[in-house]
Structure formats: structure tokens, C-alpha cells
Image (cartoon, rainbow, N blue to C red; front, side, top):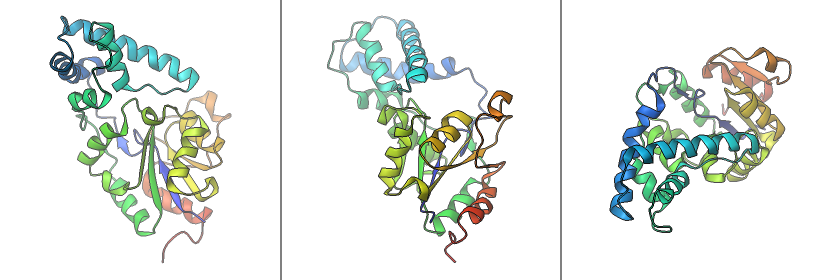
Length: 253
């Protein structure tokens, strides 16, 4: 019996194809606010450019190590490490303080895929639990602001998981298992939908779930024979038909 559907966020529910800016340049405005927060809360730092450069160096390194070890970076922690490395006293700054100062929101150029609201509303009408599981370095308290601006938050009232919060990246099975426990369902009672063959499809299958590939770009040939999704969709409005085949009684008629 189907009880839950777990979704990746970026490029599965949220379309990033319209984002055309250079990320380091775009992020500078957020880091400026954190830099100011550090100065007011702990100790003024002498050089904004040094702060921005050191943060980018550290977050890049955290991702480099994390992708191999499947340990998730947390940008709040990296902000504190950066500030302390540049002279801020240890133990004064907080992750929440840094995240609040960063003031994350909906990113210009991003939008929901057009079929998402109607499809999620239909799934909700069937009494199916839903969750978001994203490989983000931003804790979910930040992503919540973003998805609320996009009108997505109402469809995920119970469970929204960021890798930054649990410290584990997909495809590690522990992040999927953590989400299933939060929902109170077992792997055979849940389906995962995502756009990344390795993180989403192989990861969910490794945790015992059936996995649906959201196709937004061509799948690399080297993966096509190694990772085989249980199903694939070009749009989320195709998902109910697949669920009809796997769980004939899932609709709450």
C-alpha cells in the first residue's frame, strides 16, 4: 500500500533553468549581510572581500570532501568557521544568527514546474504523505522561506529534510531512512521522485524504495546501463499513471 511519496527539490519540483547569474557574484549580497552581522555581534572584520573569498574556498572544499564521504556541508557552520579564521572570537556567533543574517529567499529565475501545484494537490487529496529530501548545504529553515515564496510549503506540512540538517548526503541510505522514520512509513510503502540518477535513483533504490526519474536533461550514457529507474517521467503530471500501475488502490475514490 502506498503511504508516502518523497521528492527531491531542485530540478524536480523547482525549475532552476531560468537562473542565469554567476553564483559567487549573486551570493555576495548575502555574505555582505553576514559580514555585517559578524561585525555587530562578535568583532568587526577588516575586509569583506577576504571574507567572501575565504567562505567560497571553504564551502568548495567542504563540498569536495562531502561528495566523496557523503558528509553534507552546512553553510551556517562554514560561515562561522570563516569568520573565526579571520579573527572573530570563538563561541560568540551562532548558526541561526548567520542564517538569519544571510536572508535567503526565492532565487531570481527559479520557479515551480507548471504542473507541480495541481499534481501535489491531487496527491494530497488521496491522503498520501509527502516529504522533500534535498542535497542542500542550506538548512531547511532557509529553504522553507524559499519554497514558501514559491507556494510549495503547503504541500509538505510534515517532513522537509535538508542534507545540511542531518549531515548526510544522498545517495547514502541513512538520509532516506531518516525521512521514512519521520513519516512513520516503511520503504515498500513509499516512492521517491528525483532528477539525479545517482543521488536520487540509486540512493532511493539502495534504501529499498521504488524510484522515479524526473527527466530534465539527457542521462549520461555511462549511467544508462548501471542505474535503471523503476520508471521515468517528463512531467510530474505523469506520476499518477505510474502509481496506478504499482499501487492499483492508491487513489482515495
